[in-house]
Image (cartoon, rainbow, N blue to C red; front, side, top):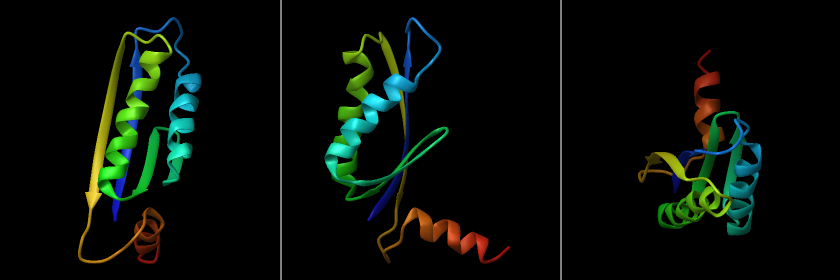
Length: 98
C-alpha cells in the first residue's frame, strides 16, 4: 500500500483564495473511495499506487475546469512493500519515541 502526499495549486486565478479549487479536488477524491487526510498544506492519500495516481490526475484537471490557466501539482510517494502501514502508523511510531 502506498501513502502519497499531494498538493494542487492553481495559478493565474482572479483571487488569492484557493479553497473552492481544493474543495473541487476533494470531491473527486471522495468519489474515488480512497482513504485520505486533508491538512493545511495538502492531502495524504492511502491505497493502491496506480489508483492514487489516476485520481491525482483527475484532481489536477479540476482547477483547469474551473478557469485556472496554470496548475502546479506536487506528489510525494511513500511506497513501502515489506509491510502494510498507514500515515497514522507513521505518526504513532514517532510519537512513541518522544
